[in-house]
Length: 588
Image (cartoon, rainbow, N blue to C red; front, top):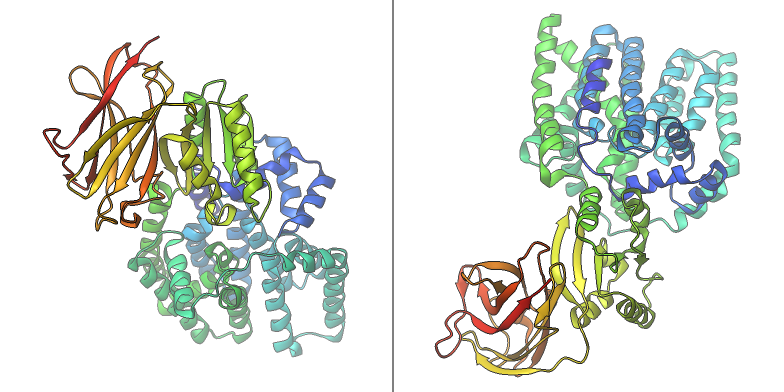
């Protein structure tokens, strides 16, 4: 059981990069314990997980495996505690079934492989539940206080225990009630110094649009069945687990025990759903805290429905099939992978030149970026303020252009960092984007800057899609491998907006007409699609063509054109579907 939980949580633990939130956690290792306390007060989480991670990392080091192994440990401990709680409430067989189900639950496994506090708060909350079942009041007080200082969602488990104590008040003696109240008083007194900080944190917590109940229900069932994987099979699997849990409660012979399992499941769930309905603060990771209670009741149902242990094992195996599918998706499906800052930084280190710079939009990516990047390029965060100051941001971009020929643009959460598109618009007008690639939800682009005093070459070439190439400018007809060829195309919308989204291709061809370098995009770095052009409007459209480091010296041809899917637009005359602009000399 514990071995299964550990094996599933350690499997491919370093296969994926740390992502943004994990970078925030990893950055705590660079701070002292008092600095972590001060930083946590400005964050939305309490400090205990960060303190724990700091101590763990100081001993085992800052590697991905080391940092994630802390969550693995807490995840395995949660499984063990679920078994101990289940054995006290329902017996060994139910406890074993529940622990096996939790061991393989995709949601629990996923967040036991992440450098965040959700596995820790789950385990500490379960420790409080276990102490409650043992009526060990000192252990309950310590575990309860640690739970609150790890993640505020843990309050739902403490509320579940107090509600259960009230519902079954007659089961306690006067002395036990006094000790119980004293334990809660210790928790309250221990959290009191942090209470004002907690209130202040809630005043600047992120709020989004309230979620619809149906969507929340679907996402919850999907998470129960498949973790972060999506699909109808996981919705149905989650629904089956939910029905089994309710059935387990209904079939229980011990109402006090069953009601504790129910509250340990439903109180965290109710808090998460309430946050989603009220302010949109719903994330599937928040559901992890209530999953052990769900699995305890599912295990109870399976045992009650099966007359023999072998049948119980068979029903549990059936329940594990969707979990296995979900786990496989979490391990191997690239579409579910975390943002790949590791791969992004490797690309920069592989292709960067000493005169380049890195620009982070949004600037708070610096913690996760610096976890991986240890090079010498200057790292610049934009915008310098929030909300963005357009004039200040443009001045900073001008200063960057004056200092550097190229930048590596790392873009994340652009809707929040630059909602008005100030940075994107400036770069589209003044920069020449040579490459662009997604690393999860993070974008990496290489943007070059060309000379400002370049002559305009007249063309006046019409395409059959109603667009005319009036002219072009080229930064230099002589380039070296590793440099970026700066090309500006000046288009005119002769007939106004097009019905189709036409993309531009720019090709550098060798002597055999083979493409050796290219850049394709909708005009103005995809900011000015041809469907938005006004009649007679002139659009300046910049492209950067990255010259490969290993491109042999020689004479090459630069051609351009437009396409929509598999269809190319035709130029007037005998040019066909491409127009040769000029020759380019590559020299060492």
